[in-house]
Image (cartoon, rainbow, N blue to C red; front, top):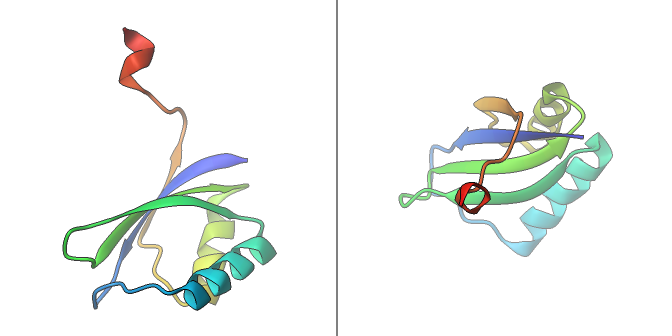
Length: 86
């Protein structure tokens, strides 16, 4: 599985609840993508999410089914951490 960063832009502030997260997780499971974690902007209208998936089209499919945006999808080739260079 490859890693992807997804930028999502929302018209309104994002307010998730347990039911919404469960629905997204179920759809992701059906599409064989895994949501690892997300960062939420201060205005709660943008997220940057890290996902595992076979390809970007799987992420697009899951986002469409969940009715959430996937405005930018970038495949990540490596993860760099500062402590690795010390």
